[in-house]
Length: 199
Image (cartoon, rainbow, N blue to C red; front, side, top):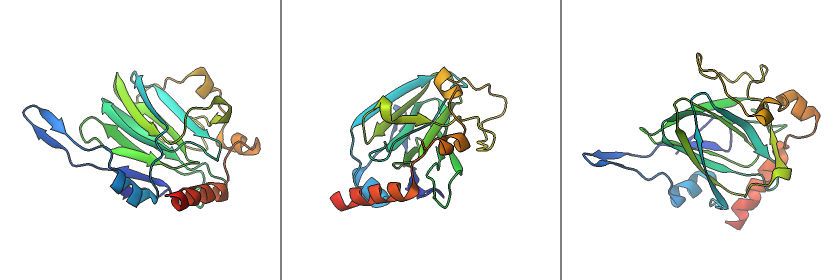
C-alpha cells in the first residue's frame, strides 16, 4: 500500500504472477487494507463500468455521512484514475492526484469518504470495477465538473473527453463550494474516526 499525498487515499500495488497460462494477483486483501485505512472496508455495493476511449466520468462524491468510499481497479484496458480533495478546510483542498490503472500492473486506488473521484478511459472497452462502502443514493450524490480550469486536472493530451450531460453540467469546484455541496474536512475526519472506533 502506498499512501498518496491526499490524506485518505492510497494505491495498492500487488505482485503479479505471470506464466504461460496468464497471470494471478491479489487485488484486495482485508488485512493490508485495514492496516492502511485504519478500519475494515464495509462492502455495500460492487460496480463495474465499461467505457470507450475518452470517456470521462466524474468528479463524483456523496454527502458525509456516510458518503461512499471506493476501492477501484481496472481489469481490462487502461484508465487515468483521479482523486480530488473536495473537503472544505482540508490542508490539500482543491488538489488532485492521478494514478494509471491498467490490466498489466493491476494497481488499485482507494479513496476514503468525502473525496471526489473521476477517471478517463485511455482505451476502448476500459473496464473498471470498484468496491463501495455505501450503496448508490441519488439524493446524496453530487459532482464537480472534471474540466473545471481552476481545478486544473491534467487529462491526457490528444484524447477528446466524452462526458455525460450530467457531468458536463456539473458546477465548478468554487460553485459547488458556494452552493454548500462540498463536505467539510472536520466532518470527514470525524466520520472516518467513528469507523475506526467500530472496527
